[in-house]
Length: 453
Image (tube, rainbow, N blue to C red; front, side):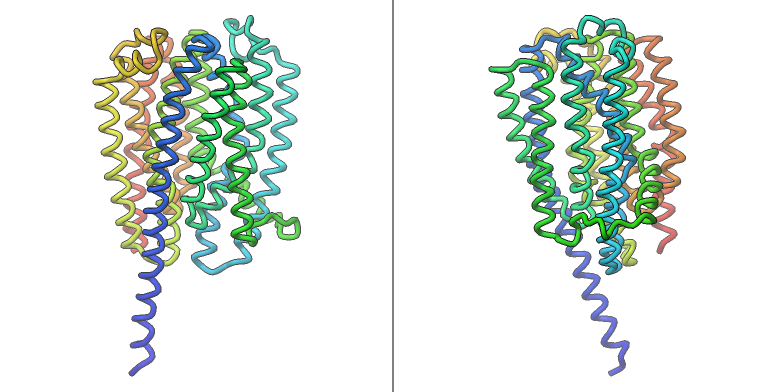
């Protein structure tokens, strides 16, 4: 029997083993993510109305304003985490263990340096810039409440610079399920901390500490567990490589332009604009919609988060049929969820707000929910395409398209906010998303999956 006769079945068996491992990692990630995301949604669904009732709408708006402001800090991480996950998945698929070690250590020390730089810059701003100049004159009498919350949040967000790398490392190793389990533990801790705050310390700064401090604690525990299970990814200065760090930084800028910019523009900048034009009350309403977006999108990310690193690994191994099958499943399930969410918001939104958040939000008109539903459906569709563009190694192209879209979204949001308020702003943002990335990116994904065959 010839040598080729023996090699072909062995190769097929090995590839089948890799495909089974990818399928198993996605299934396990989805199951554990459901527990984690359901816990997150339940926690937010219960904590938000409690916070509204204890703090009042205005102070709750200040809490959301803190979240909006500190969310900008995530931009300074320049996407190192996603670039790390992508690099690790390829390195592991190709058997380059030393590359994986250098990636992990270089990412850790680079992220630590950026965290220190961000802390110095933002700390100097908090010390020297009057807060009404940032948030608007409506916040002039709220500095005593706002400033301690900002300092608390800043400290916690800087810690997340480092610990977010653990989540991305797990994803690159196809172990997203571990992130979900630790995330569920963080939800339990946050629920207990918020309960303490409601009864004993009903202050905005403590609410920030309870929610984000619990997240930091869970991520710290996840980091320790990762290092124990995978000693090769423990950060060591001797494994730091400047060329690898430069690659992560430049790749990270591209990732940021492609993914993080959307969050900064639509969550943070538009939330800031809403506060500038409508004060804390408008910030509270827009902030609730953003929290709903995060909660609902979490269910889509249950599938997209483990899928794109698996697609990248499949393409690195030349398993194109598996990558196509995974992409098709992601698009179908994600789109179905978006359409169901739109219908549910349009039909039940006013009633849900009244029951959930109480009288302070009882008069939100139905058309507001229709506008938000349109934005959310477009947001989900774009997220699905982002995931597949990253998985198919088209990040540079994605960044160029996304930069154009984010610029147009900002212009449309400002114009619509002047014209009709938050509802028209959300609708305008959704239409721009569908017209740009919603039309361009699916063609790019299909073209790449066809070209690599």
